Length: 393
Image (cartoon, rainbow, N blue to C red; front, side, top):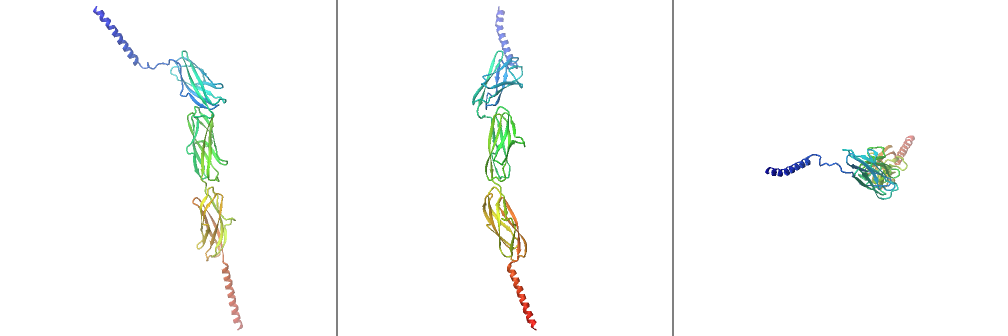
């Protein structure tokens, strides 16, 4: 009797112990917590994009379902006039056989018609399995200008310098759309300017392909005519492709170039002078550059003992394309003998200068001619007197 009572009390204890041990073993067994999918599910990292009429947009889709199940894929709630298809493995698909351990990456392609008006449109993808169904809604925002799509940004949008140099801008083209886009590049300046936009490192390319979410560096070259006056000039850069358009404005500040020419009005570079007497000669300083010339100074290098003066000696300002006459007064040495002499004249500013060499031909002064004639006359008179005196004897 005691033995039966004892056995009746021990059996429940053993059962509890066995269940506890089994539960612990079950929880500790690797892989038991990783349950297999119990139904169909659709997921995507992007549920909405912005586009313009005529664009093609795409959405990545991840399909999850129990292994071995066949899943039908259907696009529903498609706006009128729109086109959509589901791709997988490079093919248009409408049914998928779920394989164990395989990730089923799909893509929804949507064609926005050119007739689509501005607004928000919804496209729904539905996955239908044996015992469950899931759906995923995607939104396409259609606007006259695609937002969040394409932008141009210059590293330094303003460059300055003289007109005889070529300006080079670095511009970033950013594609924030969900698609790879090939862009045509265009840069526009004033008539007569040589302006181009190209991918950095490419000398002749006029197009560039930018992946979704990527960017490319562009080089914009601007070569203005050398005669361009000082001032501020705009350059318009445009990238267009895939229904997207991006623009940016660059600025070239021309500081002008400096060039002057020192000439004579009649283009003669010789002058007749007389020893000891001043002779005036007109020179012209011409501004051949595109920037004003300020504080133009005239200097001369005459032969030893000579003197050269200028009126004016300093010209305050000469505007581009203008000219100013200067009178140079050359005074040879009083002891200069007949012959040709070289007189160098220079016009200079801080940025540039020009020089001319003038050939000065010295002629004997008429006074000395008269003196010579007088000497001759006196000598003849003396000879006549001598002949008369001695002739009588």
